[in-house]
Picture 1 (tube, rainbow, N blue to C red):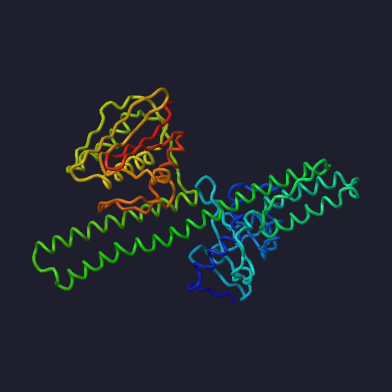
Picture 2 (spheres, helix red, strand yellow; picture 1 turned 180 degrees about the vertical axis):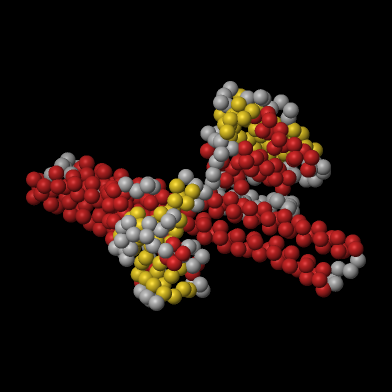
Length: 435
């Protein structure tokens, strides 16, 4: 009998995703799967204690490891697929989780993972299995070298005992370099081993840093989304209960509600964009267009919308050909503009201009607002980072906008950079190659 649980599902799902993340990434990065990749998956699933089935959109089994389904058979997708919002406990012994397989932004199939309950409930479970494939290949490589010099086994036995101890440490997630013996035949092996350990240590620290930022980010988001929602709810209750009686107070309540709704929408939009980026679902539709036409169409609504500030838009954007995704470039421009509004007073000035320099088109948004503190500048393109602002704004986000902008411009083959001085203003620019 299969049962479903929802109360613990976020924790269980997170642990399952951590457990199968290395294999899931191998599947996504090597689709369609070759026979060599399938062998790597077999070894990885066996070591990780995971059963797996991969099916296409029609339910046909394309790959299986220790699965109840036979290769080439067809299964009922509606019966066997459960995604991130729930998981299955199968016969009180195994957890089951299904994830989509993306290829170039399109779902091409699904992978079903099963693992024993004990491996998920173990609080001491270490999230470094994603390194298994790298470690396995490295160990196999070292073993192959050992085999080639087996003729020297008596002479080298003492030297390799240290290497074996090192490999045991690696299997436990301890990445310590070994002391390289001088004037020894196995010296090159020790040097290669230490390089491997250094790389694994770096990857582990990078992954732990990323996961730490994600957890901190989710905690912050939970708080920041509650704030505008609570404010909106309070003012709506005030309107419903009749606290606001005169027309002036009612209009003021409406204005505050609208402002907080705008703030909430911007935060939700940021989260949606981040989810697309995090799951590699950002789609690009590149086309060759004239720069002046594209940017005039993007900037015209901005000029007509803001009547408070002085908006200066350059009419000198050159008529050169560029290869861009118009929607993504508009997203970048609007993000720059909204940041300028957020940090500029109502009587401030925002200047948008573009010009050609050699084989690149440069677009910049400059304001005379409060500027960015020098200590914040190195981090403004990092995910989850938010600098401080002294001014309330309808354009609050969650610290993802500029990081996503940097990714978009990078995909266009350009660069993004910023100049800022506290209390004097900010100029943020990007380049796009000219065709």
